[in-house]
Image 1: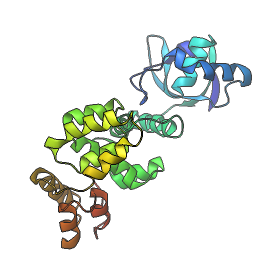
Image 2: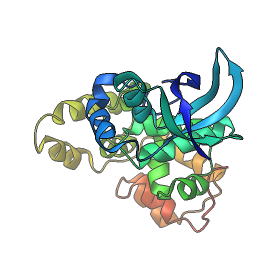
Image 3: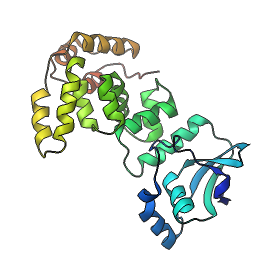
Length: 252
């Protein structure tokens, strides 16, 4: 149901939004557009127990809400009202809308996936519900296997998904130094390609092999010996090894 709701009964929590806090300055151009054309796409809210004067919580449309409330100073906003919406459903709606709009960085995507689907989600289900590939989902979940400092760089958006995929194939004790190189190279045209060629192939370390064996057992995947040896030698990626498995089951 879409109704015009008073903005002062809508609870806005910037920590709920997978994009994080939004400053009024960052939506000034959006506010100008809304002023000229009106609010074409309503925000989405869910019913909450009345608390501190709030009856509804904003779950999607945070940039539009800030533009309408804080810049245009409007008293009401068009809202799609959901009476029955769980926390996980709300996080899924928030993530799905943001994926279709302004680009999130991979750290925000990972955090949102975990909030919406749990720490150990079914990859196939996540891909289907978000309308993305299983490889897209796996690449983001694999960030959690990286060195802690690299994970923090991913959370801050310093490293791109291509950087993180490369780092995932490098021994843990080498990841920090390589991450610094990649972050610096991001400011120099063509430099990243040089680094990727240099680190593109390497033999897997003991920790990586043990981690992969554990993953294969947990996911009940059975790659051939040939593909396993190719992966251990560094000639194929994690994704290529997993895609070669004869069992298509995903993480529970």
